[in-house]
Image 1 (cartoon, rainbow, N blue to C red):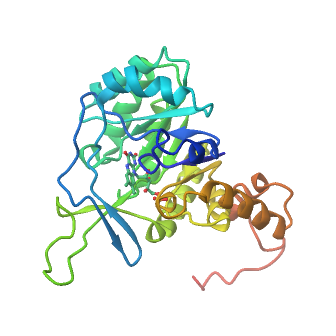
Image 2: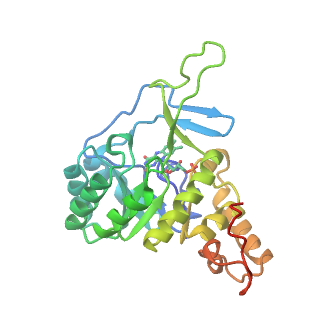
Image 3: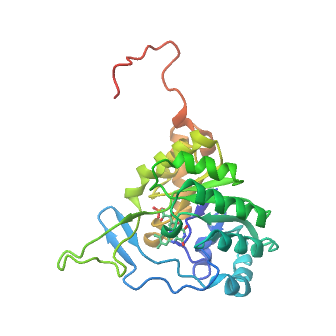
Length: 293
Ligand SMILES: Cc1cc2nc3c(=O)[nH]c(=O)nc-3n(C[C@H](O)[C@H](O)[C@H](O)COP(=O)(O)O)c2cc1C
C-alpha cells in the first residue's frame, strides 16, 4: 500500500492527490484544538525540510463533527493519527473513533516531542489505546531513541498491530545573515532526504525485532526509495515531504516502484519484501571473519 505521511497532505483541499493513495492518513488529532507554534513553521535545508507545526489541528470534537464525514466521502480508506500529552488523551480519542465505520485504522503518534520514547510510555499508550478500540493500531515511533527495537517490542507486547517508521528527528537551522534560528520556536523536525538512511535502519531493526507489519517513511522521493524500504522490511510506504514539492508523487512513485521491481526481476514489488535480510552469498562461501567491511 502507498499512503501519505501524517501532516503532509490535506485531503480536503487536495482530494485528487488523496485519491491516488491506497489509504489517507490524517494530520494528528489531539483532544483539544491547537493553533500550533509561532511562525515561521517551515524552513528548507540543504538535506530536507524543518517543520515546527506543533500539532495544529481542530481537536477531536470538531474533527468528528466536521472533517470525518467529508473525509469518509473521499472513497479512500482512512487512518486517523492520534496524539496527546498523556496516556488518557490517546485512549479517549481512540474510544471516540471506535464506532466510526469510516475509520479503518488508528496511528498512534507516540513520537511527538512531549511523549518521546521511553519504552514504558509508548507501551502504556498502546495498551490503554488497545483497551479503548477494536480498530487496528499502528504505533508511530521516533528514530531518535537509544534502542528502537526495545520500543518496537514493547509496542508489540502492548497490542499494536503494526509500526509506522519513522517520525522526524530534531534539527536546527540558523538564518545565514542573523545567525538566529530560522523557525519561530527555534528547533523543528527534520524530514526529507536526510531521513532516508535513518528510516531504512529503523525499519530493518524493527523488522528483525518484531516481524510486525511496518509502514516505512522518511525521505522517499522515488520508486526506488520506496523499494528500498520494502527490502528493509516495510509492507507499506508513506510519502511525506515529497508531496509538498510534487503533488503527482503518488502516481509517479507507484509507476517507478513497479519499474524498479521489474528491473530487478520481480513481478511485483511485494516480492522485494525484506530481501535486505536474506543471505546474498552462495552456500559454502567462506567469510573472512576478520574483516568488518
Ligand atoms: C509539515 C509536516 C507536518 C507533519 N505533521 C505530522 C503529524 O501531525 N503527525 C505525525 O505523526 N507526523 C507528522 N509529520 C511527520 C511525517 O508524517 C513523517 O513521519 C516525516 O515527515 C518523515 O517522512 P518524509 O521524510 O517523507 O517527510 C509531519 C511532517 C511534516 C514535514
